[in-house]
Image (cartoon, rainbow, N blue to C red; front, side, top):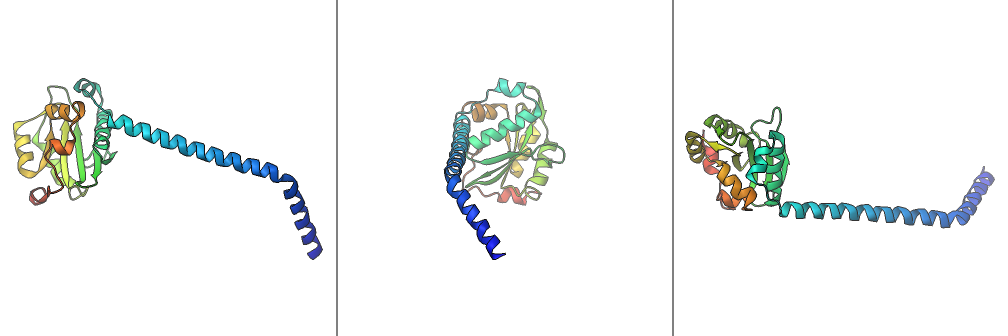
Length: 200
């Protein structure tokens, strides 16, 4: 057995001595492919960051979208604003279509309401968002965004209970003019959601 082991080891050593140029070439090739893939990934991420940094969406583009694309567009705008954002809308979303985390402002939950240009969002949407934003999604701030408008009662209720609203005019400032959402809504690092927490 010892002799067999020695012969096997000697044969392996001989094979390695003959094959090392091939093995070296394969290792270099694998390394080059790995580096190429890393560079490709970094380039793709850089281009995506640049695209989002320059992102502008017109009201006409919003109006032409369906619900799903509207949610993805809002997600991209939040990423442009410096948030880590993801679309979560769909069945069982519990009044949250986009959830984003801002490094200083905390979690922002967005309910998207894509509608006709003349469509109005009513108070019931504000109630639903208020009921789930903090207890379910751990939000510091809740926002309802529409490409239409809000009823007077919905805006008043949102202002009273800390549910922010973005209507067609504000959406244009955010998406087309390039204002950051947190600046548009007057949110700051010191913005405490205490009123939002206390509201029943």
